[in-house]
Image (cartoon, rainbow, N blue to C red; front, side, top):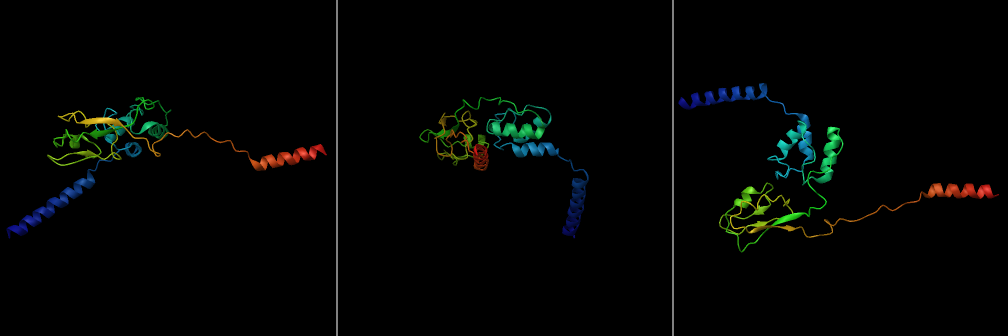
Length: 193
C-alpha cells in the first residue's frame, strides 16, 4: 500500500513539475544563440569571460566583437555581419602571435590532474599519478593549463608548420576573358578592311 501511495505522489509531483517547466519556461534570446553558434566554443576565457556563452551574451548587450583570439579575424567578420556593425581590428595582436600548443615534460609530471581540470577543451589526457600528455590537434593554445601546474612541467611551444598550417601567399592570377578578346580581335580585323 505504501509503495502505491509513493508512486501516486511521484506521478502527481512529476506532473506538476512538467506543467511548471512548460508554463514558466524562460525563452532564450535568439541573437545570443546565433552569436554563440559563430564563436569557436573553446571556452578558453581569453576574451575575459568564463566561456563562449557569457561572451555571446555580452556581445548581444553591446560589448566589442573583437575579443576572441581562437576565432580570429574570420569570427570578427561573421559577428560584424550578424550584428550589422563594421568589423573591428582584433583586441589581440593575431598577426604577430605565433600559434602555440601546450607541451608536457613527462619526466617532470607528477600526475596531479590539475592541468586536465584547467583545460577547457579536454586536450590533456592522463590519470591520477600517471604521466599526462597533450593532444596537439585539440589544444587551442589558451595557456590555461600552465599556471595550475605545481611542477612547472608545461610549456607553450610553437605549432609545427605543416602543409595545412602554412600561410600560403597565393596571389590571384589574372585571367583574360577569351570570349571578349576574340570579339575585340574580330572587331579590329573588320575595321582594318
